[in-house]
Image: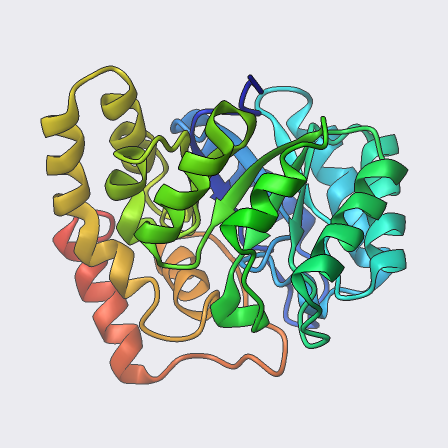
Length: 296
């Protein structure tokens, strides 16, 4: 049995940017404090929502290093260090391990679209080069590549492959992973609209975009379920479903970064090629946040 790195809601945290595009570390401090003070169970740094794909290697490592130091053990820090180039992923991962990350989040290689055998070779190479727990990240809508359940089961045999962030959208696939892997692979939802459904299938929580604006509420959906209060958990999931879906009215992280700006933090803009969302979507995001009492 592999103990999960965390249970609950880990925030797939945004990366605040200045007008010149550089990382806004003072605002990042403020936003991390808000997260920890409001129930976030882990910080997932430099993931998709953190715009890792447009950070330079130096920025990527610096951001992870800074976050680990600033969080200072208050919650686990999970470093997004995946790449479509195995050697780059190894380099980023080794640095994150040396800097004190609690775990690594490794997205499947994108664009290359390797085989399932290639996935096993890729993840095995990173596993063998590092010394921290690893969470596989399966998001085929963005990478064009799915981790098949049988592949997940093979990777689960490696001692430090701790779990999988499942964002395939297929609950049938989640059930198959659970069937094949049992307690040897923890499962976290990668889709905010499936938190409850995934918990019903043995999940340990969520790595969440929604948590950026509703950290306590997202934590509570999971916590209530784990405490046996399934009806309350389902009620909370139903209540926050609209807000969760509005965070994806445009390409992630465009809407959630807009929401964080509306919320009162200086998140800045996304880096190109991502651009600000439409005025219509901005109104939708603000009106929906107002419905939930997050803004006036």
